[in-house]
Length: 393
Ligand SMILES: Cc1cc2nc3c(=O)[nH]c(=O)nc-3n(C[C@H](O)[C@H](O)[C@H](O)COP(=O)(O)OP(=O)(O)OC[C@H]3O[C@@H](n4cnc5c(N)ncnc54)[C@H](O)[C@@H]3O)c2cc1C
Image (cartoon, rainbow, N blue to C red; front, side, top):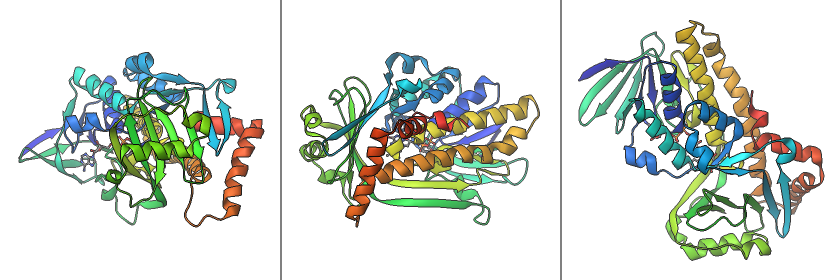
């Protein structure tokens, strides 16, 4: 058994844990990241790709914005289709934009930045267990290469995603969980074909939802709504591209170019919030605390904003010996999180085919989209939420 100490013990080396580690380190706060998976696994994971401008600023301030600024694609609008109808929603009128940059690339940038500053990232840390968060000296236990380790710390940051141990260590009589599980999933394909359109296109169709997104000028990330019990292996590349085309307006479908899938996977859709985000010295951030269905592209953005707020609170604790921000962390973050939950759940409800849906339900969806197309106020509210301007506090 080995024993060591740090100021903040971070569980999870995804975007939340890595960014928190970087922000704390830049402010001189010592920290250690414990990650269950290998470095290669973390670097290869394919997930989100749409980044809000406020989040880009946070990443720049963390010293990980250079490649994002060079290679990210700046978007000033988005398209929504319903059958053959196409609605363009312009962000520029509100001075807003989004940057398309893959989470895989951001993770690479964060890992490189941590390694360049000599950060302690412990990969393949197994059986992580949290002890003593009710007191002032919590401890993290883990196993690495068959050896048991104990890491003493002042605070534990639970950045270990939805399936991690952090949230589960909060007693059941303290933790409230709010959840909606959707009765369908998204089948996603990553392929080396140019984007179908210069901007993202979301499609609401009788056969189900579809989305054409991208990671670069030569790489597309496309999705179709699928059954929860579908197996990605059942979906040949040809079946996927045919289904995608069938759900897009004909003139867009004609522009779809196909290539073998580099990655193909099915993600379930869930809305979830845990409350509170603080229990004693344990603080939750990112997917450990909340999940949004990916329709609003909010998951990664929320995670970065949580971490920015949490880092500021921890830095104030060490620099100014003030705990005001730490005390407010849960309530302030939850207010922002619920706004993103609202938008993500709404957009999901408008665009997907729900089992047992009536013709009235479908007409309501189409009326929501018509409202977006015809009302400047509705479009302004959409842009505010979609680009993150409404989530600043
Ligand atoms: C399949 C999928 C597709 C997605 N697509 C989109 C999208 O299109 N748009 C969008 O905005 N968001 C999307 N998201 C959400 C977005 O990717 C997440 O919000 C984001 O990854 C959150 O980062 P995080 O660091 O909080 O959590 P994670 O990325 O989940 O990282 C948590 C880390 O903790 C580690 N860990 C877990 N348990 C332990 C443990 N016991 N001990 C140590 N380490 C542990 C994990 O290995 C992982 O590295 C998607 C998520 C998934 C799962």
